[in-house]
Image 1 (cartoon, rainbow, N blue to C red):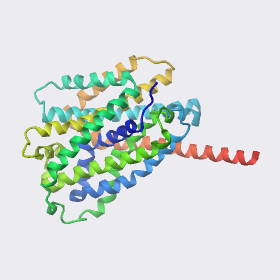
Image 2: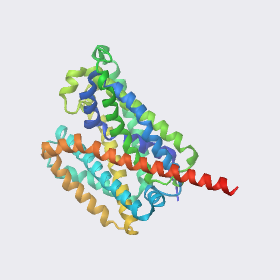
Image 3: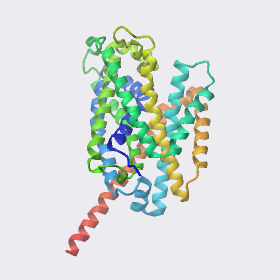
Image 4: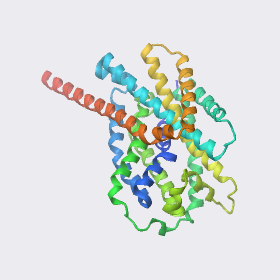
Length: 366
């Protein structure tokens, strides 16, 4: 059976970090830091190394086990399953919010006359099939999307670079007092979801002695990509116009022009964001379904069907109610992600404690 490659896993890291940026992270950073938003991404990526290193530490522990199995080994069957259920519930809520964000953007900017339920079903069909085929197929598709995305990102940045006005960033360091807040937004929204890579046992990856290096490389590549988006948006629009747009990440693509060709190229480049959100939802849903299977010790597609129906039902509610939309984007995500991160900190401490006990026993036996 073919194993997952480091490049495939790295592509998952890339998309997981991009999914929350459009419509959520960037708008939060803009409110806090204004024209200094790019600094929030830089400092946030440095802060983000803390959860990333925790995930890598857990990833390298018991390489033949996935995340659910590690929790049971660390905390016992009862507490371990409770922690798995908590992470699963939070993961399901997060992917539902991200999916709802995707549907809202498409419905608002492209297909406003199309019934929103039709959009939801259109996206849920490939998501259902991808989760059904398994993680190895998901990783292969992710790598293909990654190559396409990189090409489109290069095209967009070449087309936007010459339009950047440095004056739009002045006065520099204007919102230093809010720098920590903006940085934490980035770390919470764009780095914390990387815990999902732990659903893949390390031993399922080829040449896994290099996996940590690849994950860090793709982490930095993602940061550079998101930083370029931020610099282009502020550098071309300025902070006032950027703040007026609901989705400035989409509006900026309309300014792309390569060798004089700009007609509808924004639609092509917008596909890169769709890739990111779809991969995020697919990997998250795969984790949720896998946890359900491990709890009942049996694989059954009924869980996948039920979860897709739940996503459809919840997504129908969110775009049509401003209060629910505000709640799902501004309030729930940080609460959910902070609680999720707390679970992984507990795992880290437990692994560290267990390792010290083993070393102590080994020394005493000698």
